[in-house]
Length: 445
Image (cartoon, rainbow, N blue to C red; front, side, top):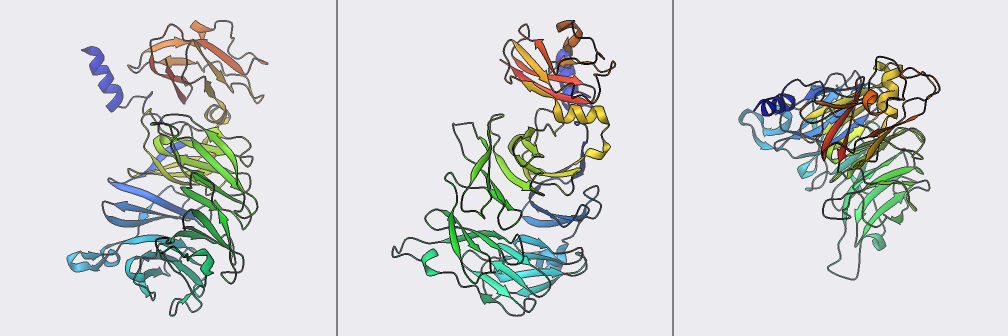
């Protein structure tokens, strides 16, 4: 009985093992029943995030790099009849132009525009009855918007809209049952358009002169869940597919020729049901990718090496739906259950930085032993007060470095970067490894 009470206390109480976030990570915002699906930042401080609360769309903004968030969409914007809260608009997408100027695409060919940072909004009507599913304004005058079968442009701030001509060979077929559907587009610069669509298979329609001429590129087999173009040449995408009933590999692909050819730069399976959902690169070197069950990867060398980062506080993380890196030191992650996570590398000391980024437990799942690597990178020896301890789910310390590997002298310089711990005597199950504020986990089989 006492073990049952202890287990409940660990799961629901303030357990330092299961509830402590890895160094640098914290929850900065939470809203019940909120599902995030998109985020964008124009600099290191100003970001917008779009979500669904039940069946109502909301937009939040931060002006301090993600530390605090403000809700923007009130009843006067969301409802056609605000006084009675009836006739809710279906808001699909947004475009962040500058600190004061935002746009949102909605159903029935309606675009919402604010010029005061979201305090007030006015409607722009596009000559279509379809949903605006993607949009991009370069300034208050020139913009593009997309429906499921039209790309439209304006050169007068939205007063008039014209169809952007796309060659019939890319959208029409002699087969009457063959139809096309536009999904989304990105403009990595003021003239480049990458339009994601389906016409028998997935393609990118590509224009480098803002829609005057077009070419087409096939998207790699097994599809694409999201993509991110840094400029007209360099882009990344994630694929989401099953290799078995429970396995979703984490795949990131890169193009350096504008989307015509793609190469894998990440292809791994780290846990069951953990496929990636989004990839984001802030420059050619710094990139992140996130997905189901708290899967999160980071690279600082253009994808040559990816680090799997533990960013959640326990062994049951939520699904990460979108992520962004506003600066070289900060990362924001948005979940499907209302959380916003923020990582701030500037809050770490030397030891925390090494532990949170460089410690790796392998093999995982483990059999006879585990190896913990990344302990000594030449910056400093291990600190004497830091101990390696292994806990079971009851919170009991079942092993420590001193018990398992007594030849290691804590604080010794020139020590090995690899510590092997014999876990053959442990029953099968989930275990936590703690050193300082860092907590890792492994599965013993």
